[in-house]
Length: 168
Image (cartoon, rainbow, N blue to C red; front, top):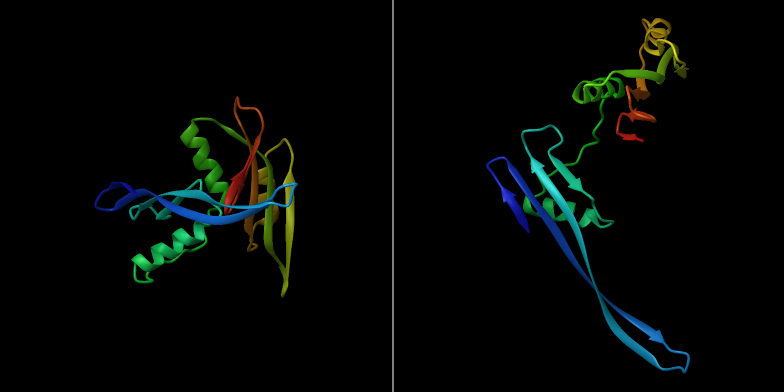
Protein backbone atom coordinates (compact mmCIF):
# COMPACT_ATOMS: atom_id res chain seq x y z
CA UNK A 1 0.00 0.00 0.00
CA UNK A 2 1.51 3.31 -1.04
CA UNK A 3 0.90 6.16 1.36
CA UNK A 4 2.80 8.88 -0.45
CA UNK A 5 4.55 9.21 -3.79
CA UNK A 6 6.66 12.06 -5.11
CA UNK A 7 9.14 12.40 -7.94
CA UNK A 8 12.02 10.97 -5.87
CA UNK A 9 10.23 9.53 -2.80
CA UNK A 10 7.88 6.67 -2.05
CA UNK A 11 6.42 5.81 1.35
CA UNK A 12 4.19 2.89 2.08
CA UNK A 13 3.47 -0.31 3.94
CA UNK A 14 4.07 -3.83 2.74
CA UNK A 15 1.35 -6.08 4.15
CA UNK A 16 1.80 -9.82 4.17
CA UNK A 17 -1.09 -12.12 4.92
CA UNK A 18 -0.15 -15.47 6.44
CA UNK A 19 -2.71 -18.26 6.70
CA UNK A 20 -1.90 -21.35 8.76
CA UNK A 21 -3.95 -24.36 9.67
CA UNK A 22 -3.60 -25.47 13.25
CA UNK A 23 -4.83 -28.65 14.85
CA UNK A 24 -5.65 -28.81 18.55
CA UNK A 25 -6.59 -31.89 20.52
CA UNK A 26 -8.83 -31.40 23.55
CA UNK A 27 -8.49 -33.50 26.75
CA UNK A 28 -11.15 -35.93 25.45
CA UNK A 29 -9.27 -36.83 22.26
CA UNK A 30 -11.33 -34.69 19.88
CA UNK A 31 -9.30 -32.86 17.28
CA UNK A 32 -10.27 -29.47 15.99
CA UNK A 33 -8.63 -27.81 13.05
CA UNK A 34 -8.85 -24.09 12.46
CA UNK A 35 -7.26 -21.44 10.33
CA UNK A 36 -5.11 -18.77 11.88
CA UNK A 37 -4.68 -15.56 9.91
CA UNK A 38 -1.83 -13.18 10.65
CA UNK A 39 -0.91 -9.89 9.01
CA UNK A 40 2.67 -8.66 9.05
CA UNK A 41 3.40 -5.07 8.17
CA UNK A 42 6.68 -3.47 7.14
CA UNK A 43 6.56 0.27 6.68
CA UNK A 44 9.15 1.68 4.32
CA UNK A 45 10.40 4.96 2.92
CA UNK A 46 12.44 5.23 -0.27
CA UNK A 47 14.22 8.48 -1.01
CA UNK A 48 16.83 8.70 -3.73
CA UNK A 49 18.02 12.13 -2.56
CA UNK A 50 19.71 10.73 0.58
CA UNK A 51 22.57 8.26 0.74
CA UNK A 52 20.71 5.47 2.57
CA UNK A 53 17.88 5.32 0.00
CA UNK A 54 15.67 2.76 1.75
CA UNK A 55 14.50 2.95 5.34
CA UNK A 56 12.56 0.08 6.91
CA UNK A 57 10.51 1.36 9.83
CA UNK A 58 9.80 -1.28 12.50
CA UNK A 59 10.51 -4.15 10.10
CA UNK A 60 9.01 -7.55 10.80
CA UNK A 61 10.87 -10.84 10.87
CA UNK A 62 9.89 -11.35 7.26
CA UNK A 63 11.42 -8.13 5.89
CA UNK A 64 13.31 -10.33 3.44
CA UNK A 65 10.02 -10.89 1.58
CA UNK A 66 9.67 -7.12 1.18
CA UNK A 67 13.21 -6.94 -0.18
CA UNK A 68 12.41 -9.82 -2.57
CA UNK A 69 9.39 -7.89 -3.79
CA UNK A 70 11.54 -4.80 -4.39
CA UNK A 71 13.94 -6.99 -6.40
CA UNK A 72 11.09 -8.23 -8.59
CA UNK A 73 9.66 -4.74 -9.11
CA UNK A 74 13.02 -3.26 -10.12
CA UNK A 75 14.00 -6.07 -12.48
CA UNK A 76 16.70 -7.18 -10.01
CA UNK A 77 18.43 -3.78 -10.13
CA UNK A 78 17.84 -3.28 -6.40
CA UNK A 79 20.83 -3.70 -4.08
CA UNK A 80 21.49 -3.43 -0.37
CA UNK A 81 24.86 -2.31 0.89
CA UNK A 82 26.21 -2.18 4.40
CA UNK A 83 25.90 1.30 5.80
CA UNK A 84 28.82 2.54 7.80
CA UNK A 85 29.48 5.89 9.41
CA UNK A 86 32.49 7.23 11.30
CA UNK A 87 31.36 7.01 14.95
CA UNK A 88 33.29 10.13 15.99
CA UNK A 89 31.86 12.22 13.16
CA UNK A 90 28.39 10.87 13.92
CA UNK A 91 28.70 11.80 17.61
CA UNK A 92 29.88 15.30 16.74
CA UNK A 93 27.04 15.84 14.23
CA UNK A 94 24.52 14.61 16.80
CA UNK A 95 25.97 17.05 19.31
CA UNK A 96 25.55 19.93 16.84
CA UNK A 97 21.98 18.92 15.93
CA UNK A 98 21.02 18.74 19.61
CA UNK A 99 22.91 21.96 20.43
CA UNK A 100 24.57 20.16 23.34
CA UNK A 101 28.23 19.76 24.16
CA UNK A 102 29.60 16.24 24.47
CA UNK A 103 32.26 14.71 26.63
CA UNK A 104 33.97 11.76 25.01
CA UNK A 105 34.40 9.08 27.67
CA UNK A 106 35.76 6.22 25.57
CA UNK A 107 37.24 5.63 22.12
CA UNK A 108 38.01 2.17 20.77
CA UNK A 109 40.39 2.12 17.82
CA UNK A 110 40.83 -1.06 15.80
CA UNK A 111 42.87 -2.29 12.88
CA UNK A 112 45.86 -0.30 14.15
CA UNK A 113 48.93 -0.97 12.03
CA UNK A 114 51.54 -2.11 14.54
CA UNK A 115 54.03 -3.90 12.28
CA UNK A 116 54.04 -5.70 8.95
CA UNK A 117 51.11 -8.12 9.09
CA UNK A 118 50.26 -7.16 12.69
CA UNK A 119 47.27 -5.07 13.76
CA UNK A 120 45.94 -4.20 17.16
CA UNK A 121 43.08 -2.66 19.09
CA UNK A 122 43.28 0.02 21.78
CA UNK A 123 40.76 1.34 24.27
CA UNK A 124 41.08 4.92 25.49
CA UNK A 125 38.88 6.01 28.41
CA UNK A 126 38.81 8.60 31.12
CA UNK A 127 37.43 11.91 32.32
CA UNK A 128 40.09 14.04 30.56
CA UNK A 129 40.55 14.80 26.87
CA UNK A 130 40.27 11.21 25.64
CA UNK A 131 40.22 12.20 21.97
CA UNK A 132 43.50 14.17 22.10
CA UNK A 133 45.20 11.40 24.06
CA UNK A 134 44.08 8.80 21.50
CA UNK A 135 45.15 11.01 18.58
CA UNK A 136 48.65 11.53 20.03
CA UNK A 137 49.25 7.79 20.45
CA UNK A 138 47.74 6.84 17.07
CA UNK A 139 49.46 9.63 15.12
CA UNK A 140 50.94 8.36 11.86
CA UNK A 141 49.23 4.96 12.06
CA UNK A 142 46.36 3.56 10.01
CA UNK A 143 43.33 2.65 12.16
CA UNK A 144 39.54 2.65 12.29
CA UNK A 145 37.36 4.14 15.00
CA UNK A 146 35.23 1.20 16.17
CA UNK A 147 33.32 2.86 19.04
CA UNK A 148 32.90 6.24 20.63
CA UNK A 149 31.10 6.61 23.95
CA UNK A 150 29.87 10.10 24.83
CA UNK A 151 27.86 11.90 27.47
CA UNK A 152 25.69 14.80 26.35
CA UNK A 153 25.58 17.96 28.42
CA UNK A 154 22.58 17.99 30.82
CA UNK A 155 21.42 14.49 29.78
CA UNK A 156 21.84 11.48 32.07
CA UNK A 157 23.51 8.36 30.69
CA UNK A 158 25.98 7.65 27.93
CA UNK A 159 25.53 6.89 24.23
CA UNK A 160 27.81 4.58 22.27
CA UNK A 161 28.21 5.24 18.55
CA UNK A 162 29.35 2.40 16.28
CA UNK A 163 29.94 2.31 12.52
CA UNK A 164 26.63 0.46 11.84
CA UNK A 165 24.46 1.88 14.59
CA UNK A 166 24.18 3.17 18.09
CA UNK A 167 23.22 1.64 21.37
CA UNK A 168 21.84 3.50 24.36
